[in-house]
Length: 93
Image (cartoon, rainbow, N blue to C red; front, side, top):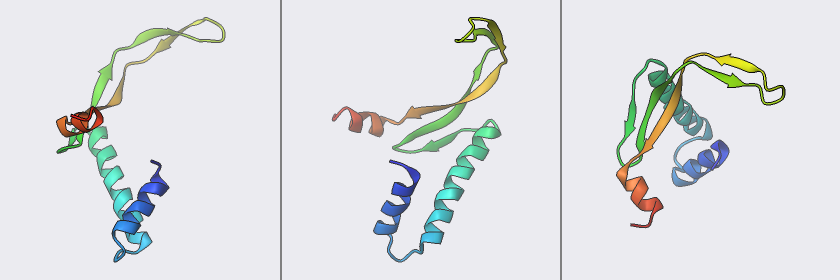
């Protein structure tokens, strides 16, 4: 599902809301998750899963075209852990 499909589904399920209101809600939702992760926090949505960040160590990588060694700095990357209900739904349990 892409963002526009999500907006259409929400508009269909909530005919009393204007398109601008739905888009604003979706924007705020994603902005808040991104902001919390940028602050080093965690976002847990019960029944869905939890978003957090993980630290990646600095390492030496390779340029795939030239094979030359390239230093890759340490960084934080987003991580998602699905909740129990989602795992069960995916596995039809």
